[in-house]
Length: 247
Image 1 (tube, one colour):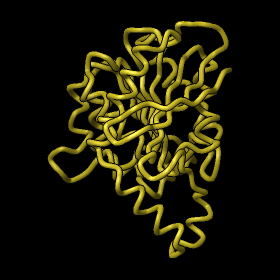
Image 2 (tube, rainbow, N blue to C red):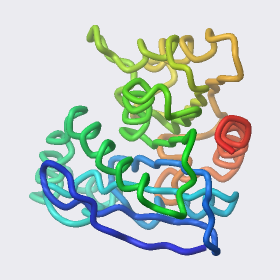
Image 3 (tube, rainbow, N blue to C red):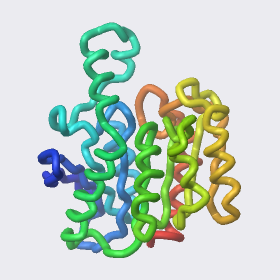
Image 4 (cartoon, rainbow, N blue to C red):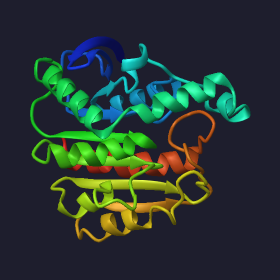
């Protein structure tokens, strides 16, 4: 595998993008990856390699670049002392990133990928973890002709009481969707995400939302919530969709 970082110009400044791809010149089918709440940490880079090992170029934008380059936090440390200055500051950073910012950053990333000879033109996939799952649904809705498949792992804030809740776009998305939620998720439970589950499973195509036994929030990223069996099942499902829709 080859991992590189490069700057991408956005309306708000230079955004770092991490790219992981197989050896060789390509071009490779593309998966855009949206990181989980803690940022582009070591666990995220591990799963980027896992997807890239299947033959994909995986490109992940730095969600928090407006506050510094590749900010990533230790979730266990923040939970141990939620009143610490570090925890409070990261909470402010997390809440500062809006959907509009995410989509503007995505537009900049897509323009960069258009100029990358290792990135194969055509239909893309996208994957997201935690808050990144919300970005998957927003991105698929904003670029319906580009994203042929999306995978949402332990999604957060995808089902909300507002009239623009991300799950409401699911029935009309042209691309297929996979959602994996841990049965033991206490941060964004399966019950809280039931409208998303129903929307995905009601599409009548290859899309699938499932609840994974024994798994907690974060099961798909090596680290605090990692659950190997659930992760293996979820990645198997997601990669099968990518192989059919994106390759």
